[in-house]
Length: 271
Image (cartoon, rainbow, N blue to C red):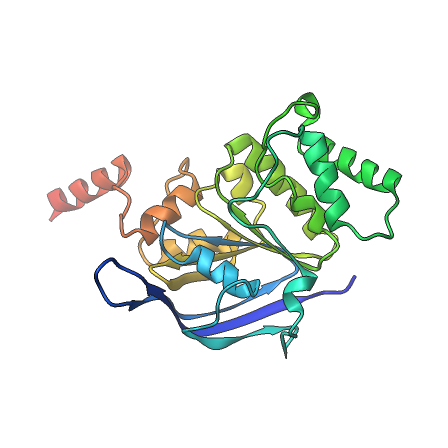
């Protein structure tokens, strides 16, 4: 199985903001951000407005490079001009026809995205497999607009970028389980996600945590709580790690547990 890795380093990324009756001003979105994404599930997390979408767009080469300082390497080499045509990219607000059923939308996506080397029967089997994986069998013939309906048809790419916002927790888990299976075939999956539940969080191989445009953690997901605990931020036993990390990156230190309060009171009485 061929392994792939994506390295990136940004000095800064600024975006022009147009305000009524005012001259255009620059707002710095990302500052001194660097890291590496290897084969597997790579999650970008952080509070609203921290730069998750901008980072994802830059990695996928879907963002205007004006104001960008830094470099992005693919397996140690600069990206080619046609790089963005060789990766799968799903935007936050996808365009889906509301006059078609779920299966018809999937068939349309398969027909325009999959290579012509696939026969009509093969495309139908792929669509049926996607419906089964996402648990959409009961609503396959319902006229609706399910989110991120085209994600599976990017699986011929080695790099895939997703923005998982606007899904309910059950659908998000189904989508993430599909992506997890896809990552085990040798793909590098990079996605931004806001506040996943624990059953989703534990699927992440690598976590990239942003706060106000800066990286606060980049490494194995299983090591993040130990790191924060070592600097005085401990996650309570039954707390969702994702909720805990968002509280920290937003500057809201979790309240002391009852045991911690008792320990403090005991120490004060002893002194």
